[in-house]
Length: 190
Length: 190
Image 1 (spheres, chains in turn yellow, orange):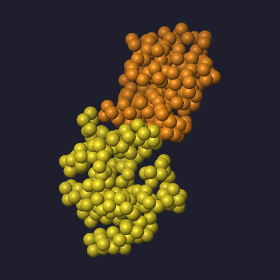
Image 2: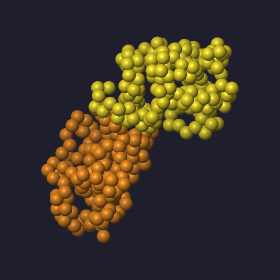
Image 3: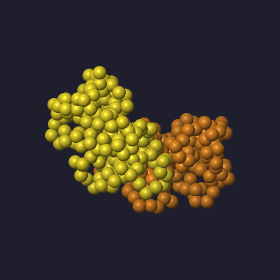
Image 4: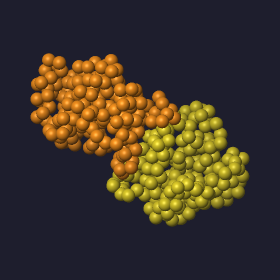
């Protein structure tokens, strides 16, 4: 049985605290709260949003390369792996069985083309939760509650731009997501 | 029989002049000459480089969307289509039958992961031929003759950066090519 977010939130948070330490723990609570707020704003399932937000970084501090091998997850860079390993581990343990919640966890770092509303919510919450502080976060935070699709486009555009500038590898799921959302807003100032 | 570059160059140029007009015609001759120079520099087949350089934009001024439908070529944007339609048309007419030359024509705009030397030569020649004049072309021109792989990485990085900045759609072949060449020069100042 999947963990019951409303009835067992305290137990879930304690479990999370054993795996995710320090700032990343605070960040997880921040994403949970932001995901709840966005779910209310856009009429998504709040239980699912809270659960996915809370657990999205569950494996962030584990050995993701070893887990990727165990679960047979292909990857381009280690950095984008933890969403996939978290979904695989949480499913295996039976903590999360709902495919929508698993999808939101799986794709929270890269995004993908054709994201569900829940996936968009966790993707954006991860970027704009209250502990985040970097140039441009205010605009993304504002857009998140004004038009989530525009916020997704902004985050993807910014992320891909940074990767290119910083000599990193570009995730092709992110590129397909970017093209998907750019098509919604052709030529718009985002 | 494929057109013979050395024996029939004049005939090929006349044929090209009927399809490609104005600055694009001059550009085609510029790519031809630059491809020949790069082929000499890197020890590639000069006949193939000259032929591919000359004909790379053969369909640039035709109805590429109609041709893409005719030849069943999938595409993201019209802009990157002409390499594919040129390869298809030149092959159909029997003007070019050599698969290496066709590949260099097909991928000259987007690049792709695992490019052949000839493909890299035409890709780069298209960007740095003498008629090209834009910020950064000098560095690309220099790199082209110093280290063609670094030049390819620079051009891909610049192109993807521009597309993102100018609110365009990002070609996934270019992204896979970029990742391919970035892996050759991790963290390097390109």
